[in-house]
Length: 312
Image (cartoon, rainbow, N blue to C red; front, side):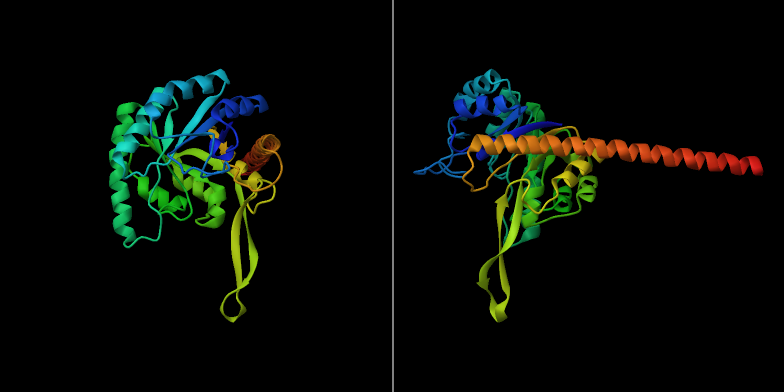
């Protein structure tokens, strides 16, 4: 597997600062955030993010994006686009830029819930993706949709239903275990089996729920969610990597860090990279142990079968 950073996670750094800093820590790639964002007095994840490339003027920025990425020695894990699948003009622009960058794959976004008519909205999104797949094929790239809370595809099951039958060479699903803490969680082994050939990319972050100190009717405890470090969240990240290794996934794993803590950004990223490497290595050792146990069991079964044939 290869590891990258989504630049929504590095709001204080400009592109010229983000790419070399990420590369120096040993990350393999970068996933640039591309969207027209709101301004802010202080850089934030979603507004005033200095490591975000505007969608407006993207075509002119492509050479600079490519230069900064390559000079840092990084590869593109994907392009983190925010264009709605229904916005064909902006999706076309993202697909063309992805092809020009040699980035391979780009995310588009899907409608948020609640919607007035879920089935009609789902059907319209499917039609938009059918169009996007044709355009992705024309550009030689892949379009991605993400498992995301608050959208029409928060789970692997919903995402598979949305993309089923489309060319998996041109459309894929981003699995995001952190988003699924909030909504849509399914057993990881099962989720990856459901997605099958459509599992194209993995985002990794963690999250927690906690009582917020407020009470609802009849003293019901009220809960809130927030992002956490990989170590502190509710998802067992080792489980994630064991599930990925068990299906032979060897693609990109992209970190998203939206936590609000005082630890300097570079320290947080380096700690996350070390944690991810450790978790991946533990998964590989687990897979070796499973393979050895399976081989031993098979040998024992074969020996018992041979003994039975001899006695007969």
